[in-house]
Image: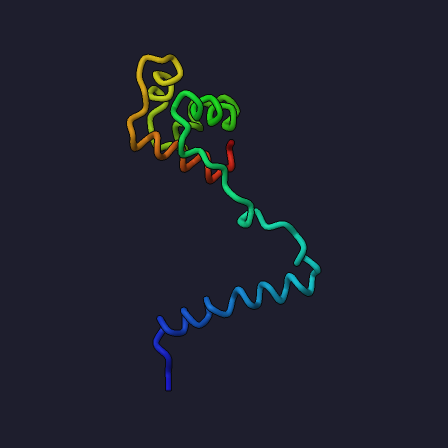
Amino acid sequence: MRKNTGEAATTAKDQRPEADLERAAQQGLQDTPNIAEEPKPDVSDQGQEELLPKLFAYFHDSREELARALGVHRSSVDRWLNGTSRPNNSTLLRMRRLAQERRIE
């Protein structure tokens, strides 16, 4: 009896982690720290005043890179840094999520 492709793909995906663990054990990589296990920093209470300088420094003071990572235009980042405007709530949430993903404290 043939499996449909969805079942076969699911079965293949389910088997991959076991194979990866076996390979890691064979290579002696079991004790290697896993970055996914480290807790992400809690930046949920940080506002734009705290997050913006940290993110700006993380992106090596590149307004273009920070803007690209947040999905906004570079001029928006310029206005935030100059203090002439503030990021809206959805952008602030993206800033927090980005800081957590990149483990910026």
